[in-house]
Image (cartoon, rainbow, N blue to C red; front, side, top):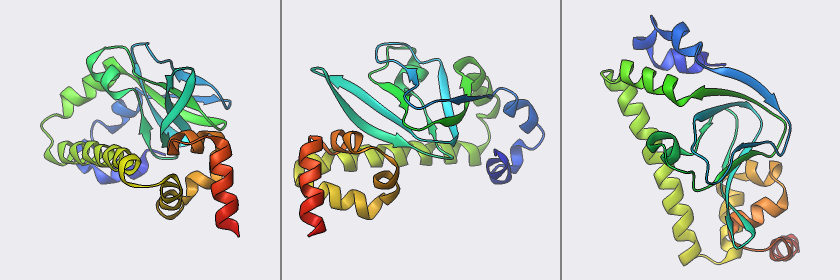
Amino acid sequence: MFNQFRDRFPALKDKWDEYISYYNRIEVPAKTVLLKEGEVSQKAFFIEKGCLRAWFNNNTRDITFQFAFENEMLSGADSFRKSIPSFFTIETIEPSILHWIHKKDLDRILADTSRIPELKDNMLDAAFERQYHYMKHFLSFIKDTPEQRYLNLLKEKPHIVKRVPQQYIATYLGITPVSLSRIRNRLAK
């Protein structure tokens, strides 16, 4: 499973088995909470199979702001890196196979590999890609209608619409499930 990454970083060849040994494989059912809002994150998750969502509570309403799927990593990044309470909850949407790494082990790997330019560049690219996604999603709430946000989701990330329950998609789009149902019905005509 991690072979695709090994091939991308030949400089890690000698340490690869050691680094992989830090990851722990778990199988969890749908609706498993991996990190609760307010807790300090100690684990980062790599998804082998399944779907995760990141959400926060806003006046007793869940607001989903991120989905993660196969071959992606998810953690409460600020909480994980800075040892501060997480702003959000991470939970599984589907039964999932995950590989998690503890913060102290990832810190050890990062310290050990900090002088490898290609790895640093790749990590910066991943951070900027995630930042771009958040910025684009945030700006869509200012400039797009809910229907346009849904159409953009269909165009740019159709796998979300196929795999994620409608109530989570609705909160991701900033609307109620009833509004999403109306949009879908209108577009189906």
